Image (cartoon, rainbow, N blue to C red; front, side, top):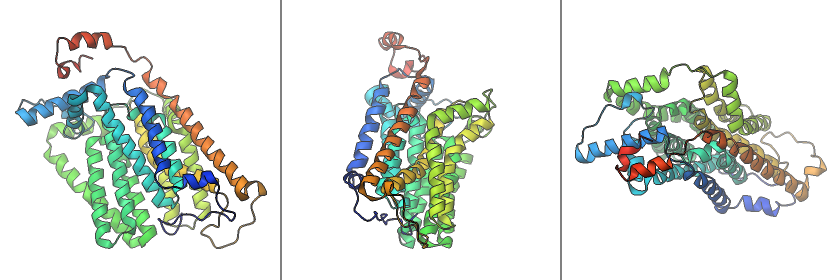
Amino acid sequence: MPARVDQLPQAPAGGPGTVERLLGARGWPLAIVLVIQLGLSLSLVWKTTAFLDEALYLSVGHLELAHFLHDAPMPQVSYYLSGSPLVYPPLAAAADTVGGLAAARLLSLAFMLLATVLLHGVCRRLTGSRTAAFFAAALFAGLGPTQYLGALATYDAMALALLALATWLGVRAAEQSEAARYALVSAGGIAMMAADAAKYAAALFDPVAVLVVALACWHAQGRRQGLTAGGVMTLAAAVPLAAGYYLAGPSLRQGVSATTVDRAQGSDSIGSVVGLSAHATGVIAILAVLGAALCMYKMRRGPAWALALVLAGAEFLAPAEQARIHTLTSLYKHVDYGAWFACMMAGYLLGEWSAGPKRTSRDEPRPRPPRYVDGPDGRSWALALSIAVSLLAGISSTKTIGTEYAGWPNSRPVMAALSRLLKPADYYLVE
């Protein structure tokens, strides 16, 4: 990756093509990606009625709001929730009060759009290429799990957006002065803590976020500053998390243990876990591994190598963890966390390919590339191929959404009848 995180890669002699210049422009390429992501998720928002998880979180949120606003009795719910009842449920319940289940799902969509914007920003700073950032955002937006999380009123969209914010703040800090750097890294740690509180399983990706930030600061400021930044971010997250864990009481500690840390073993085979992961984000895994290999080939040993391995390796964390406990439950959602990081390496690969041959950071001369990839016409074909790969990755992943909705019961007639008799907060769990 380039020596300066804000330095754009230089195009080969002959000048970039029109499409390449457009993809490198500010603003509107990302806006197009966001519009497509918005449309894909919106098509799912009204597709079904609430399922059990949504009903549970919204009901708990309404109970928390009633307890806070009117001092209503609050039952112990922490022991069976996989996230703090004080973080996401009240926010989702407030949206539900305004516009029903659709509004709560639209809140998740806003979080997922934010995650895509932050992915673009992090990738642009790490690779120095707006083209790579565009492809990273496009790949992530086209994933079936991304569209699914954007149309579901669950913890995951909020947790992923907060984890993305933590990473963005830390990477943004790499080129700042010392005081500003530590302030941003500390803010990133607090955002990471909030992500873990929103969804306990998000903690699986905390080491990835910390390593990305530490390596980015190491690359820009040196090893000592990188290690310090990683330590500050870890402390900023760990101290309030530990305090909250022990102050929240035994109910929450039981919930963390039962739903996340000591989750009961399932009966699903390792092959089924690998198969679902491959269908959902397998293309991203392949592109990320190839991108990491290309980065390691072009760069010297050091933080760039480690960063490439960390970003690509994040894709395999959720499948490995769920293969360990033999369960497919929530896997389709959890793989999107790792994909958010891995898309940076996938975007780097497509960005480098579409830009054509360039001098690497190593000083030794490179042989002249074959004629079919040299010159504007060659770059146009390479860019077209990169765009085609992005589209095919999105199409193949989007097809997996159907399996998640298979067998979803149509409860609209029952809900319509109940809505005439009960308040909305009373009948979500009946659904």
